[in-house]
Length: 158
Image (cartoon, rainbow, N blue to C red; front, side):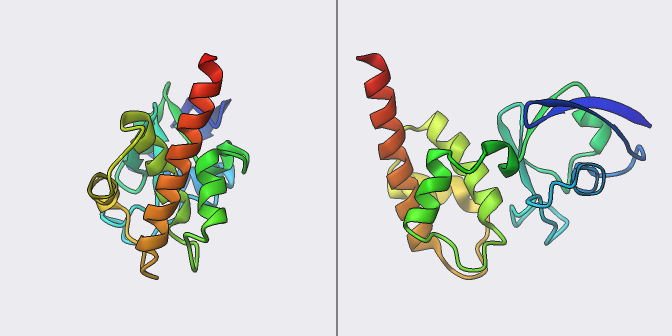
């Protein structure tokens, strides 16, 4: 079946089986390789995308259900998002497999909680697993990104 949706700000029309997950469509039809399959059951976060701004496991979402909606992958951030820069600055990754999903989840976290405490960060990222164990650096990156985003917001108000 064919359906249209917005991906990283662009309207896309793709072909998918009714029982196919969004993860496969994003990778196969659109070549978005930051969306990664690991567990296939929605517990690791490697396949996280933002669906209308909310983090979802694309390995669990039937692709046709994304029809008419907006999907953001890390490719859509352009490499200059403050969360991306913070992850790079503090080296909050080792192998990088979990990083795209972490970044997208952190973006939503900081929209909801602009100045999160460490326990809030850890709780919010509970669905994103880092097999390399970079959690200390990830928390550091979240705090740095939060500070940068608050600073940008203050400059915008003056």
